[in-house]
Amino acid sequence: MTKRPDISGNRLFSATAAMEPRATLQTIQLPWKKASGFSVYDFSGNKYIDMTSGIFVANAGHANKAIKTAIKKTLDSDLLFSYNYPTEVKRDFLKKLLAVSPRHFNCAMLLMSGSETVDAAYKLMKNWGNKHGRKYIITFKGSYHGRGLSNDLISGSSAKAGWSGVKDKNVVFLDFPYSPDARFDPEKLPPPEQIAGFMLETFQGWGAWFYPKKYLGDLCAFARKAGALVCFDEMQSGFYRLGAIYGYLTYSPSIKPDILCLGKGISSSLPLAAVLTRKVIADVDPKADLHGTQSGNPLCCAASLANLKFLSSPRIQAHLRKVIPVWEKETAALAGLPGVKLVNTRGLIAGIIFEDAKTATAAVKRCIYDGVLPVCTNRNSIKLAPPLCITADAIKEAIEVLRAAICGAAGNSSK
Ligand SMILES: Cc1ncc(COP(=O)(O)O)c(C=O)c1O
Image 1 (cartoon, rainbow, N blue to C red):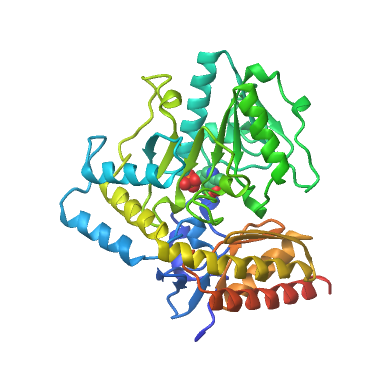
Image 2: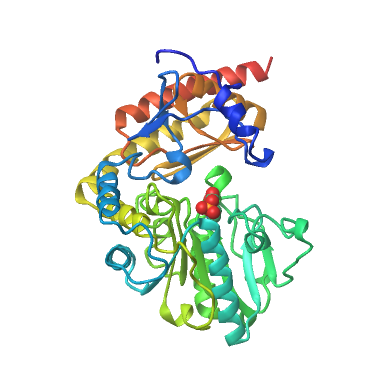
């Protein structure tokens, strides 16, 4: 650390803030100059250990060399845009995506953002339900699935889309099983033969809350027996964040979802997202509008292909096997700190749950001041999700900074 950043306000922040809606502004006003590997740099020459992956995107590390090379090569080929026409790079990327995914998936549609994938999954479940006389979609209270209207209809609570005046009375919200003893209760559901599908965040985002393994196993077994679809929103949990290619596999390798919503870490960089499914589901309505102007953009496909090659390589897989135990041990040990209720940790994600939001936000600000950038949730949690290339030493250094910041923030709030 050379100089201390001023995160309470700065000229770059004010200049952009003047032109953007208030709702887009970050609590943490940290201007980024560049980012590489697991480090972010500001304009004062400060370097931060990134515990955000730029919000779950840079799984392969920021400005990853292989990804940059692939983008440059495509740039020089003069194929910057191709609408929905076939291209070699799109073919190669689709092949690789299906090759690294469980075998039962045989179809992928390319989009630009996670929100779009959830919108498409909602449409697939509805179309499939219409064909089979099933109308209900089951989801969880407190979940997050993106920011469009269909996303709000199946996120958080039935009040989330209140701003629109639109209500989908066939979306049923279950309580999230926060307790390790929670049991899946089919009695709380509509008749099984009327359920089109389940929409599940692989873990609940704000605090990295995992379902109890038995709960999720029972839910998936129930869905299979009922003939209902299961969709995992893998936006935060995909692409080895939890150790396996997709987070749902860390509950049980026998779970076989029908639809996956993918984005963020799919490219570690440029905007690309995908819905992974089976043709029998995707092709229910051949007229369904399932692609867009920029779907499968060649630069994004090139970046994502290089990203998947990098992340699935034996070198990175061996690295993950080495650092994940360090991560899980170091983050779990934060549970005993003052003000901390518990820690949820798996793979390279952790959610630290606090007694109150004020202490969590104060600890985040202190951490940044000391050179570590966590995810500020503005709730009673801190989330940590470093690029997967992080080293064991950097993990230990960052957790030490975090520990001091939490103790300081908890001490101040008890005064
Ligand atoms: C679980 C989940 N679903 C969907 C989204 C929306 O993704 P995007 O911001 O790419 O539209 C997010 C974004 O944070 C997410 O965390």
